[in-house]
Image (cartoon, rainbow over all chains, first blue to last red; front, side):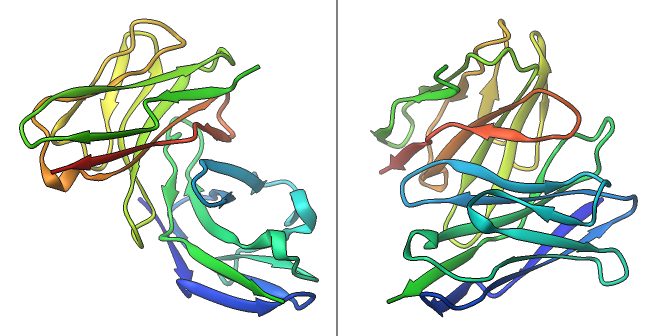
Length: 114
Length: 112
């Protein structure tokens, strides 16, 4: 079984500040890990994914995430927040192989203040 | 290339009514999924399909049914609407075992 915990349901940063959204996972086998972003009144779109290649994964819009097996974490970062980054972010885990189902975290709402 | 499309965008139902949420993808993906999203709860998997004619239950299947007669379409059926089914419903599809899923814009359902 797999599970995901996102620490902090709401994160607020100033424009230009570092963005750090936390995600910890639980998995019985090496997982696939994902970050999705949801803008208001829209569906989810993929930001980035980890599939056992490089542990530092770069995604769209300047976001990146680092897979740390020892900490069972996959935190999302961006060096400098932009107003357009305001959205809800979801971390998700899958066991891969024949288990192709995603388990989502509860989401973190990112607010960017001018 | 439209991706994943869903209809309707918004619907109000009375308790006990039935309806079908439509989902179509034009990417020739084998895997398709239905999720519901409730505030503060993330997304919960309702049903999924690994190909035409094959469907299976997810986490929260009660009160819903699905069918998959073609690769493109994956409708979700609510037979007897209940207030607990008020939610935003997302359809998604995926091509391969790296599990990237592509989401539709959602259907907002209100059951009164």
